[in-house]
Length: 358
Image (tube, rainbow, N blue to C red):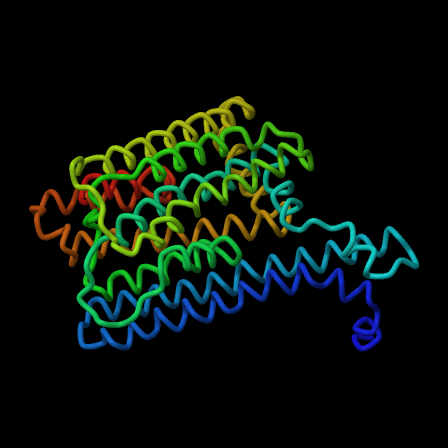
């Protein structure tokens, strides 16, 4: 069957986008995994960073397995549904009509319950990007070649954020870095891109699924998040202005505030829809998690990214450079803040944590 398809010029032509996608994803995964594992092995003499690295590598592996199980389930199911509804149609007809990228986002924004889950991940990513941007400015204590932050983010966009995030942190911690914000002054490009990405998240559910605006805004979100890391990576000098050392903290507080407004309004909307019946609200949100495979994948992606963030924040409080300047009560308060991430959402807690401890 496969040989017959490979002899079909139309099948080969329609396969090119799929091959292009996985032709970038798989090498990115291999390179990032290999780099992080290499840093982990090189740093094995340090017990706590090594234990953290092993835990993060385990999270990345489990997340890759879980998120892509749901993605593959959805792709196969979508093809089967199309072929069953169009008897006698060849697989090339489905390949010609499918738009997996946009189609996945249509499913995770189709109801307010779906969006309540999905936007949590989208609200977290800007603060992750800011941290990556700032982290790329610091000096390393190791001579190992490191993968640029943009490489990890590309893996996250094509694969899963919860895979790229722990892999990046393994490399980051192995270089002797922590939560200190080394970047100094946030660039104009970083600030405007993060602000526009937040705005894009706000308008996304109000755009008609499948429309030109929906598709454009969706792609714009990804470009806005990636651009600051790509252009900073192109700056070979690696130098940034330090005339405004609090600008990154202010940007992080802004992102935390936006995420809190989003979380609060969407949660109140869910409660109001169920006449403030908490049990029914939680039941509806739980049902949304299993409403379709795409939703399960992005929500699992968020859960895994949250787990990674909490583990990293607790490590920084207990063993990192940021925690050394904290007293006992300071460590208790910052640990409590980190543990609030699953409740208030990581998009609120993580940037606020960085602003306070960085």
